[in-house]
Length: 112
Image (tube, rainbow, N blue to C red; front, side, top):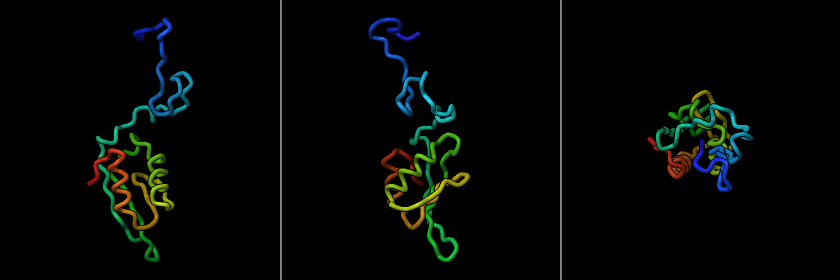
């Protein structure tokens, strides 16, 4: 029971991720229990692929306890490049290691 349940000051609980009431929230259950960024360490590297293409790779984030697709979107927007989510890594096309490190630090991730 909430503190002001049944009174005019009653504010029903809202989802931390989408901001909707918990009864109306459509977020998958596994996204509601995300690990905070300050508890995760991201490792950023640049790898060479076929035909000499460079790819910035972010590893070390918990795939089941992180919202990797949302993080990928932020990184793509910041870098102005394409990318994808692999099994346990995020890949951004091109050499954007410094920009990715800076953005991850501002979000709150530890970068190693």
